[in-house]
Length: 363
Ligand code: FA5
Image 1 (tube, rainbow, N blue to C red):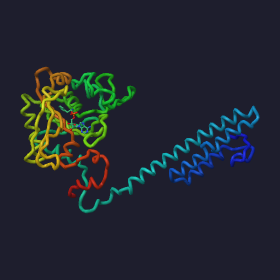
Image 2: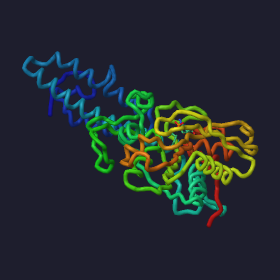
Image 3: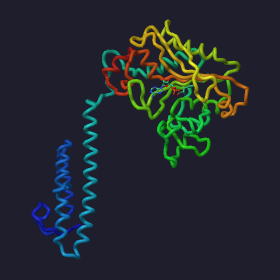
Image 4: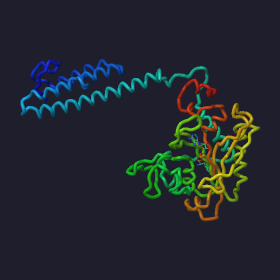
């Protein structure tokens, strides 16, 4: 591809300028570039206001009329290719910068030394929670982080008008997305699940009572990050469906859990509250003498209640034939209380100075 130009610039000393030559020079110049500032300087030389391309464009004016369109087209094609080369180089520099900010790459085959391994506090609280509930006969049920509107809201008795369904509160997928491994009820949209209560529905649709499941997992909301809120956090859902269950069983179950987790000297409180999928519904508050500056204060840790008749109906259970209770607790909030962590952001920063405090003895 050639185009005629006439200028004192590097590419314009000859009457005929070869775009392959420009491409080659760009690649050579970028080959030596390792920093963003050097990158910007090279980019300016070729694509900047006083760069090579601006000069080439200016010089089209000096060409004979019949050569102008072809020269313009050739310049545009060449410029497009060069822009792609710059984009790729910038991506390479950004990856380098990100790697540099992470420090040395750890070798997973090496021992962490000191006879200890780190265990993320969320993993620790999750394991501990499962261990405690397994003493009461609960088993773990897995759930999908991508869900559909029906499973996340409608089946849980949450009407279209409920604020949690707003675009501003929930991460919706585009309507044309199709995921073979997440079954739908109709033609509803996919969402990132906003709570683990979805697992209640999937479990009841596939099993008959008696049911005793626990489902820890990640959930997503458009919440602004601060010391106690994160847009990505973890909950642990519990569901019991058995003949004759009552609010007393629910309260006793939660009391057992918190006493096992924190030890004697903690109290739970159930405050009447509204969740569309339980009736009656309660907030679960927690108070303990042993949690540093949060000691002796009531702290909201989750929601719970008796499964609403409509939810049973949506899962195909005959009206009035079953009773059950459900609860959902925030795992970050639990870990914060248990380990005395005062900022939720610490869970997600992978700072080894923080993580090292949660080491476990090597088995
Ligand atoms: C729920 O999500 C209900 N699904 C809980 C439930 C289950 C009620 C079963 C009844 C029966 P809520 O939105 O209140 O409820 O969240 C439950 C807990 O998740 C909160 O108490 C809190 O501990 C935690 N949580 C909520 N939002 C955040 C957030 N942005 N960051 C960290 N933790 C959060």
